[in-house]
Length: 114
Length: 109
Image (cartoon, rainbow over all chains, first blue to last red; front, top):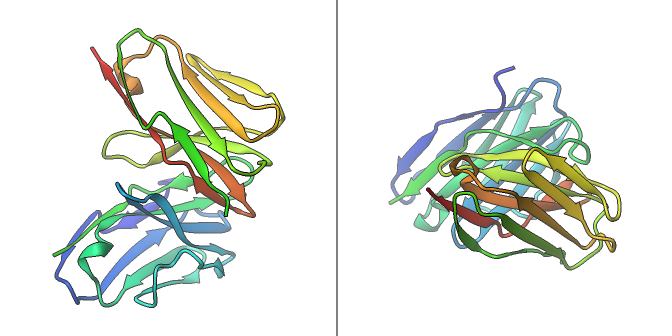
């Protein structure tokens, strides 16, 4: 298995632009998580899905952020409009059962908003 | 809400020295997980502890879960340059995990 695949690896965009981050989880993993990592705030959970259904989006910062999982093999995290404070590394992770065996993280998308 | 704190925040050791990071939760945990993130990389799952007082070893790494299940530690014996990175503990809240603040380890050759 190729693991969790995220794209793009790097994204530089101007303030106000729409940004879409993509994730392909490991096949058969029913849980998908989006995390954001910054030096100041560490690893923060934004949202997670179970069987393509959003379960907990309490970590989504504000209405500018949205996430979808249209099928078991694809998820997107969208920021519209983007702001400089959104600059961070965004990780997607998937798991068969988070309570046993942990998450498998993707390589992340480093987002820079200028 | 649930908080998971780690100390120290940073640790520089000479190669061959031992290293320990401590993880403390404000609430009792059903289990705890540990991850390692290399510089520029992504977190990688290392291990999960479930039982009170549990101790698990992976080569030079020893993981321990406290008796009260509110704290945990990771000890590395005779560090090597390959141990460089940030070590995170993570505690569950339902099916999601809250990550600790991390301990960044630097090993000086």
